[in-house]
Image (cartoon, rainbow, N blue to C red; front, side, top):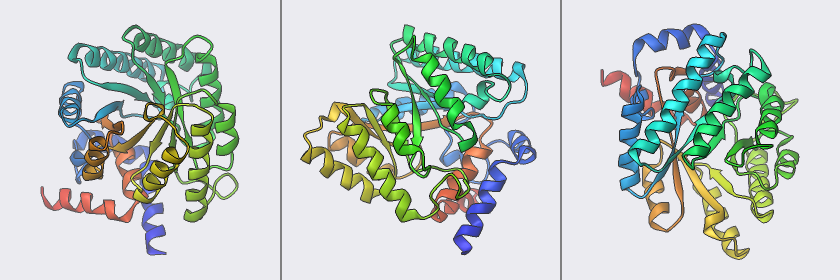
Length: 304
């Protein structure tokens, strides 16, 4: 019960615009620097280079969400384009992850679509890939609609499906052939749309992983759960699924030992590397996911 209470508190904080705005002025605090790769493109590229040298590939995410003005969305679009250009110039192994609410989804669908076209087109020129992060369930259908429009023209774009949503299985079936990152889910969702029980979420997670792999589609399994990872290893071996059809993904700063072990075993291991000054919402969701993550905050707080 205490764990659920703390989870709810962190999730509530993650959605507070007042706290998010204040955090931009604080700089990386409370241990956030351990899980956020700095506030600039340059600092993020440096971290990616270090991870590449350890045999890990990456995806960069310029943090930010729920913008309220076209100016902010256009600025975020240009920043993501500059990030792709920086990846290309540096020659590092990284693709890009984006959130549509940072690019104006809540303002106007077509406006956001145009912003995304610019980003995906830039990535296409550099032979790179863009992953559309999935946000809360209220944005799920609009995100998939926008992905569908993009894929009329581009094949270098995919998205994320969250296993805790009841709709996840059907979405995975509908997205056969699309590169998907499969996750358990990190937002607070009501029982009307999402499983609340951990065992049910885990079961559905393995279900959609098997489903997408067996369809022959590229699958990114994003989890720190070693039980799930071991099950996936056995499943791909038993079903002769080639290693170039899937990858494991983990967050920057978490389970670094497991990340390197998977890379040593010959699996593609991609690290999700967030950066930027809009870090608070992301950090609060990480604290909410697992009580153990609070240790990061305490260590960072008392280390000041």
